[in-house]
Image 1: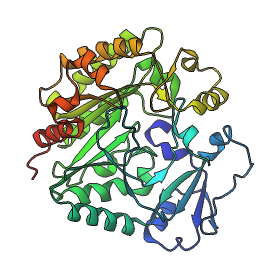
Image 2 (image 1 turned 90 degrees about the vertical axis):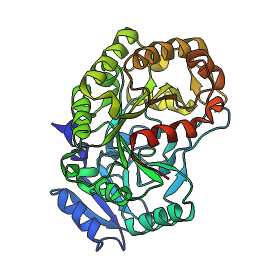
Image 3 (image 1 turned 90 degrees about the horizontal axis):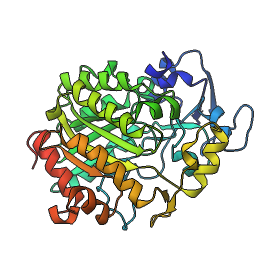
Length: 377
């Protein structure tokens, strides 16, 4: 089925001039047979076959894959704002956009082009990674590829995750997190990960996953994939983000959490994050134009300190207390349960402490990684 390989939606491949002879490019084209392939000038994005203005151009854009060079930095701190607690995550930018289609996806308001892109100059990527880790040997790095794209959605075509897993296996001051809504795993079963890779999935209430996360793997498939990874020795993480208010939300999230802890060993989970729906102001108009039957954007929101719309604090606290209570009943004591981009006040109301009382959120996550991922410096 399509959700088992999100890359199946791709119909057209554009290759930036000068990249067509790269072995990685050749292998990607070979793994995506039957697609139209063309060469495009450097730094010039391909036009869609039937030009459309955004936002509806995203629908057609997801069928186009651009293979190109990244001429900027690959490794950057996660975008954050000082008004809310950030976890100190480092983003490895391997491409832009995603073949899956979540109604709430922030990339719809962030990107100014609708196509998928993947950066093929991986020799530069690994050189930059090696230099950063070597220059900062006493820093503990949490690095992930799931910020501007889904970590695994194109992986059956690109094979990048296997290369990353094998790179990180002997890095004593870093862990890699691969976060996804897909279940592309076959090519990773023989990887020698040495406990340095955390396989992570975004989870939600079943009605939200069914209605608002198009072309993604269903809950059962994500949990089956997580169980397979646990059996292969991988550490796990889960992200309830965005938590969305909807009719029956209490029972929906209860069901997901119940099924999660029945499916995977609690001791394998390194961290679990909670984050209520938040979005840039332009996203509402874009998403409702593309998905007119979706209703959750019509709730009441307030503009937060990060210039994103959020639920009112009372509703966020209610939802967080519900999910956190269910998770804390079942999770391993060494697992870190945390909020993504929330204030100290919310932390105090739900958990009874603020991150700064425990050395900061980054330190809390480092402690969990040290407990779960083997010896670290």
